[in-house]
Length: 177
Image (cartoon, helix red, strand yellow):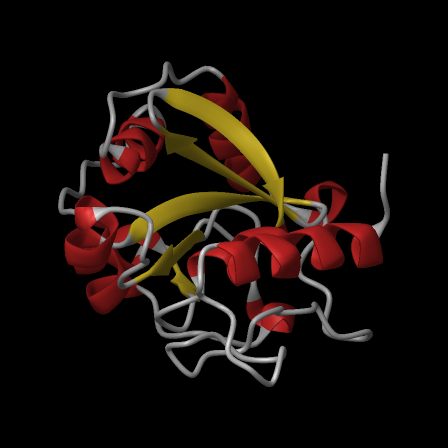
């Protein structure tokens, strides 16, 4: 399996093919950074450092069935609802605008939602954005096209940060830490 530089190179090549990489090779055509590295010393929380409720949410996420196309927020909301602490609803952009204000990866804790306000991979992404769940160890889980997947954090932030800055926070402003 390729390292970070291999993932970065393949991702930048894919952006170029889609016409989303600016001429400078470092930014997108939307003026955003083309690759969002997790800086050394600014690593997010590891799963083993998470509390019991945070780890339980990760278990719930792994046990939550995929939702249909365009229902990333519904998948995240369902995983949270399985904790029994209430239900928050909205599309990804509403979750992004309402609960995600942090941008420093050192502030990213297990169980936080990670979202972008818009992305260029379809009308739904442009209108509603995308949201996933940080599950620790530099991994985001999300639901795309009816499939739940795990994506390395830097790749997720880069892919969905093409047109808007990715941010994170606690769903419903309910801290699990």
